[in-house]
Image 1 (cartoon, rainbow, N blue to C red):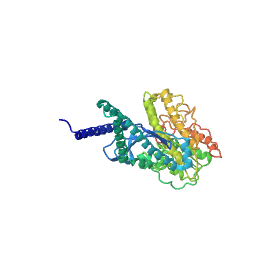
Image 2 (image 1 turned 60 degrees about the horizontal axis):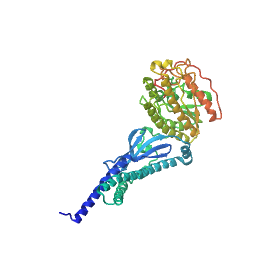
Image 3 (image 1 turned 120 degrees about the vertical axis):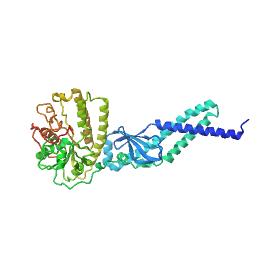
Image 4 (image 1 turned 30 degrees about the vertical axis):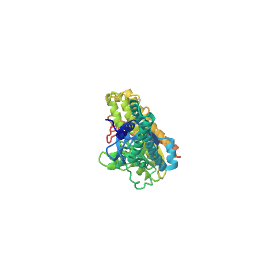
Length: 481
């Protein structure tokens, strides 16, 4: 029995509708999987913007791939398709510093938010084009099999459906995403911040302080004797009377305030409070430095703990090799994270209201060519070379960042006084704080600071050449940092 014309027409229309919907769904699904993430750069941060795979829920967080670690975003996004952002690289460039100084943080923040939103829009332009490409393949195949209708008419109808469904779906389910991304001022806004990293206001003014030292255990004097009547925080931070801050105070007849603390990182120590091993909480160092309203200079020693240098050194000594690609990649991620935090610290130092000079200390090489005293711990020339290379990368970041902001750099020289020499400036494996400077080493750091100060301070002062000192005592810590 012949099928009537209306029934045939309904069946034909039904076939086309079903075909178009199946092809559209498949094309969009494939396009979301293969569409290239869009690279955006702003505020010294390079990120890639794309979309997550469709989710069953209608609202939820996006995804931030932070140096290989996927974490949910703090903002909530409407719709089953949400943004995915991959943080690739952090750098400090002259352009970023110039924008920051000339236009302030608002311009930098605005640029970042605009770039993220623009990257999201570019991503969906590419996704739509790729979906069209994926849809064209089965549509052409269907025309070839059925030999009707005309190929261009069928293709045009199918592609129109793909575009309408794709764009309509974006407008209906993800139209608010660009607005949300434009509200992001820094990548921290995407993840939130640890409550411990929120610094309080500056403390009680310290107008009688001429210099402030901030940083980690190399600045606090870890492993060296405490001064008279140390506070619980002084003891937990390892602040010593043999630290280089005291050498600078003696040489310049200054009141030097040392707020450095062992194990301090930029985020948990300098910009935010630090939880110490004895349960005490050390206040953020930068607000304390800001309270020294008449300070001539702030001296910074930081980076080793951000890079987990102590742990890395111990693992390197215990492993058969530490120049493998996995270790190098892990160090690269840590260095990128540190660079981002270091940029934030330099920006905050640059904006201090009293505008003190800033001097950044590089790290010394504790090893040298003679490793005889470390051979029983597994240290070899190849391992030493890998560690020194990574230490050099850290020092390069320290020096480049300081230079871009117009700050000074001091380079302590321990040549001829490394760990296994007869007159070391470094605490040995059996000392309270291995790889940290001893009293003579702190004096050498102070000497390097004095040599750098004339570029910052018109009144140069000399201090004695470092000399050997008895083996120190104090609280233990595993390694440099």
